[in-house]
Structures are given as structure tokens and as C-alpha cells.
Length: 349
Ligand SMILES: O=C(O)CCC(=O)C(=O)O
Ligand SMILES: [Fe+2]
Image 1 (cartoon, rainbow, N blue to C red):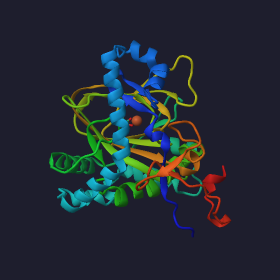
Image 2 (tube, rainbow, N blue to C red):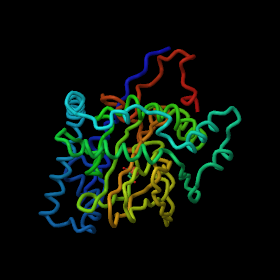
Image 3 (cartoon, protein in one colour):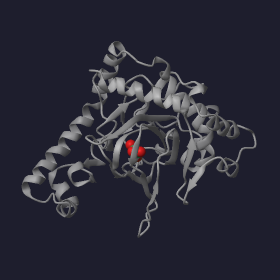
């Protein structure tokens, strides 16, 4: 068998999809003049047109680009510190066990791995929302969710260094940094989720999701309340509600990024504790503000190199690969030197 190819990122990470929080806008940034020429009107419309505010916006964007450039290095450092010093409260939650999973979820996986499994059969076990290919299904047990959130709170309250889940969420935990990728998220994706996504999203590489970025987001009254509209850097996303108690805070979904309609229709989907939502990463979505309590959700952005190597979902171009740590952003170098028997079936579509 050929050695696994290292994962890469696309260079657009340093220039595209930069989120300007104060005006709720994603921008591409090369330099100040380009920003003004591409987004001058949009910035003005959102109250960011005065010279002082513009100045602050440019400074924020440049700081975000710097943050992104230092990310790999800082994340590796944090991971090493956490591995050597963090004292886990529930060490057991780091190794996935069947007992963490809802019996109904195990039943779904068992159906999907049976020889005659088909989409219509699977849909009998899930709840579907409109025609947007959004599905809800049971995932974890309540007991597991409680222990997991307790572990995350323990980490949050510790003096360990913490990264932000992504440029839009300020609160939460990057699961690779606390050591949950290897024995929890990777087996969850490979052994349990992939048989399901293979049937739901074959066109998006659902059968060959070969990497992920996993994190937990947290919303609370004096922290983040909501999340602006966006699409994920993922082919398929799993979003599981872990608790705790909260009101409001539903998700809303609009069009698929590559298939916009003149008047997008939005649907709202509630989070149900212990249950997960599967959706296409490219489905435009956001989170409405919570009204009380705390909301913790596990988010797994799942990626298929066979799909994204052709087109980066963030810049819509052939990806320009740059070195990365771990799973990077899920791209791999081209497979031209592969011998035929190692060619992944997914890459033949
Ligand atoms: O708050 C949520 O449930 C959604 C979070 C989300 O969409 C994301 O982090 O990509
Ligand atoms: Fe998202």
C-alpha cells in the first residue's frame, strides 16, 4: 500500500474569506486599495465607511491574516503544552466507545454497512428538512454528552493555552489540540459516519471523507450569542447538540453555495440535545442568538481530498497547495505517481 499522502492547505486561507466582525462581512484581501474597490459600497452600507472605521477594519483584517500565518506554529505549541500539562477530568471520553453512542445511531450504522443498504432505506431512520439535504439523527447518549461537556468546561477553566475554533467563533475548543482526534473523531468519521455519508452525499465524496477539522462551539449570554451566515470549509458537516440547557439558538439554512437562487429561502432547524444534524458544508447557514442558558455543540467539518483537490471550496479555484500541520485543510498532492491498485475509487468519479 502507498504511504498516506500528507495533507495540505490552500494558499487562499491567507487572503480569502476573512471575516470582518463589526460589519458581518466576509472579504478577500490583498491590499487596502483592492479592499476599497471590491467592498467599498458593502462596507459603507454596513456603517463601516468613515475613514476612522475603515482604518480599524484594515487593521483588523491585517491582524487576522497575521493570526492565520502564525496558526500552525502556535497550534503545535499549544498541543505540546496541553499534552504535557493538562489534567483530564474524564480521561475515558478521549477514546470512542460504542457505549457513548445512542443505540438508534448504532442501528443506523449497522443498516448502512449492510450489503443492500440504499438511500431510501436510510431515510426511514432520519428526519429530513425540506429538499436541502439536511438530516437529523440520534448520535450520543445523554450520559456521554454530560461527561464530554464537563471535560470541556474543565479545560476551559484551566490555565492551558487555547485556540479559537475558527475566525467566527470566539468560544469553544479545538479538539485536535486537546488530543481528541486520534482515538475519538477519526474513528467516529471512519467507522460510523462514513457509511452514512456515503449514502447521503455520494456526489460530495461522502464515501471517502478522509480528514476533518473538529471543534466544539459554545454560546452563552456574555460570550458569543449567535453566528453569522457562512458556509463551512467542508464537504459534509456534522453538528451535534451536547446541551446544556438553552432557549432559542436554532440554526437557519439558505441556499447551497454553488446553486444560489434569486430569492433564497431560509428554513430554521432546532437543535435537539444528543442529536446531530448532517448537512453539506456548502449549505449557507448561521445560528440565531440564544435567549438564555448555554449551548455547546460538537462540529465536525469532514473533507474529501478527492473532491477538494479539484476545486477549493473557499476560493473556487484549483487549490494552490501549501504545507500544513496534521490534516491541514484536507487537500493532498496529486496522485499522478500512484500505482493503479492504490487509486481511491472516490477519485474516479
Ligand atoms: O452554532 C452552531 O450550531 C453552528 C456552528 C457552525 O455552523 C460552525 O461552526 O461552522
Ligand atoms: Fe458552519
